[in-house]
Length: 457
Figure 1 (tube, rainbow, N blue to C red):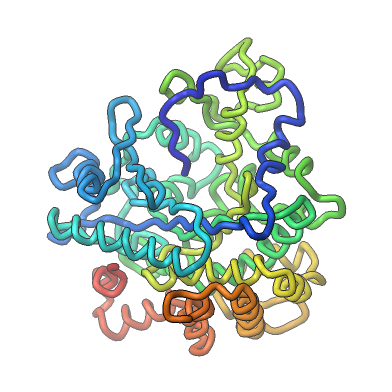
Figure 2: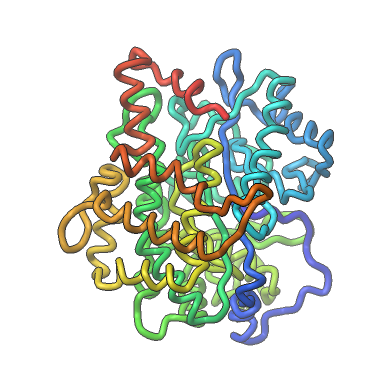
């Protein structure tokens, strides 16, 4: 989630609908200027007893953040509390229960992405040795209850935690108990955005299956392969889902703006503080009728904030965010951007990917999305068969897209090698979650703490 620490000076008021569309229009780039932004979260645990460190305890989250100064990172504060670190590799920030996130810099190729990931993990592992903490790459805490988890001192999280139980049963689990990998990608035009959005939404269940990595809740199998993905189905129906309108004729920036104007607000940021506006309407804000700030009009930064509070499977801001993957270890952090860059950044690959899914009805897409959290690659697809049956074809398309990019490292390797972990999953027909379940029953004596050794970075 985005980190904001101060109100923008001379921030223009929103006085026309054109200003709502402008962030999307400004995102348009020539293909040569496309970049890749990768975000990945990880759980932090004490090696002594596996508890999740609080913010203030010795060797806890604050100390971990501040230790990053040894590597050139600078603290970012909110109300006197360090809530992020800024540096050349992007931002290290906190999710609600202390999950540590790297929001990486916009990079040219996957080689750079993987090097950035490697630097970050090397740094936090060294810090972990100093403080006796470890980091686990998974989609959900395997053993923690909500009550066992701390809350980080970020104003927006308190507002969200208060609002979530009013609109769904699992929103607090989303906040406190999940981790993900995401990739942010560019588009060249409104039409290009629309095609990428459609392919991204339609194939997001395949990404969810390939990265499914959350089969345990509070120490026991939960009946799902990606419980993290299932959580989104009961978080907040106003701001989640597969967005059927994206597949309708004429979809573009204006239609997405209409959707965002229907999404209830969470907050307004003023003078360094978050003001609770949960459930209120941005349309009312534009009329000066927001109950939280009566008489005030929104600024362009308020709109940017609001764009960050919807959580569909693919999200549009001034770039497209692919949001369907569970957290995982180093090689899958590199594999997710490779998967989507291969499919979306080469026109021939993009067209081929669209050909795979273009005849699916919206009902069939919704059915697939609903079945994937439990069934993974065994989820049925339109026309018969399962995701397993198209996974190899889609990976082949992604591989061709990466090869066409011709982005080579210093020894002449292109980006296709980053897909190998996903090809291995397809070849064995088992998601990471199913591998974990095999270990649970056969190697760990039904003790999920075995996951800490298997999934630690």
